[in-house]
Length: 59
Image: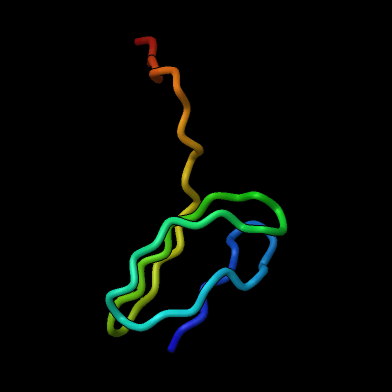
């Protein structure tokens, strides 16, 4: 069992076994994160909030 912590404030978000893949919002600070737990590794990435407007990049 592994515990995932918020990359922004450090609050414990969830626990899981290898194969766990979840998108979660921290109840303390509101940061969105993606948690992926593998056999020997765990990845926690900040996830930008979804918006209704398309994102445009200017060259």
